Length: 266
Length: 171
Image: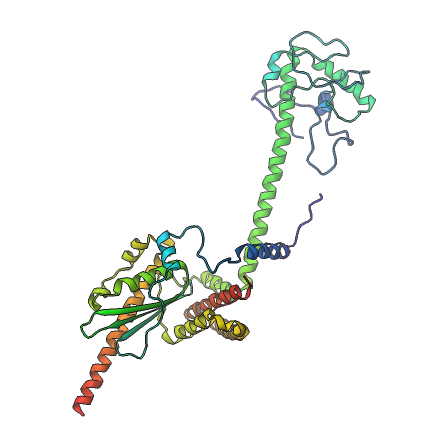
């Protein structure tokens, strides 16, 4: 865990040193590998003195002198002012696991080390450091998750674009620098538009519901034909022709959508 | 780590199914709920002048236009009397709500105008009247093109008729 200096020019005494301060992640019973490491403040601070096995509710900070054995360590009031630091650093966390006795001893030693006013800012800042560093770890994880979500969505989009012949063709046009049909362009190919109109009208007719399959095959055949022509146009680098054909394909794609909407029973 | 990635296709299929169920229309087709101005919705729900006129009638001009970018088709027909005044207009549009509203409004406006007056109708007027958003301005342009196409077709027919009349006279 990289130690974070909370203030410029901070001494090593302020930084969390695992060999000196204890490693809260060492107790495998508390942390599950691979999950977000929770801070067991109890392990970190080891407020429970050796021999005291009773569970005590977290107590707020009080001013006072050195802690007598078996009682919560009094701290100056300045420690409680930091909102990020839970004040239950004295006494075991209620419902926490039973810690191995060896650790209890080791940490109770360091706990008494930390007792006293001089150690308060250190403890506060150590906890704050850990809290922040673990929180940053989560954020880091979230960011990575976000990035991978973005990536996978991009891949999906790309795949869908390439799968559909119309969007594929339009994308190829874009890559070749040809502008696709602008929205303000007007198509005036009467014969073709008449054909589209007729198919549209057929779709709109209520009695034609049985003939939907017929219309569907017609649309499909036309689309396949146009797709083949578009492919041929691209192969011979006739981009303008490809553009015109893709515009025609667009009309049929719209018809297909309308047909699908009709097919779904409402 | 405990996170099993779901196949995108499975996810997409599930989403699509859920989406289609939600989008099932309850009482006929409805325009997109958010974003359409009430004037556009009004034209959509209470369409005026939908239908067809006889193409072969010599006083009827038919304009058939399409927007290649969005695949909308619009047919606008006008019937002109001997004085050059538009007495009737009909439209049929297959496309978005804004396109339908634009063509509906166009038929309303051309009725009672002369051919020259109708040619002066601008897409900006249509867009302003319907409060079309910028992305739908091309729909009003399509309607303007449809009016022009219909009137051009009418003029062409008139010229053709004049020619055939002349030939009949000369014969």
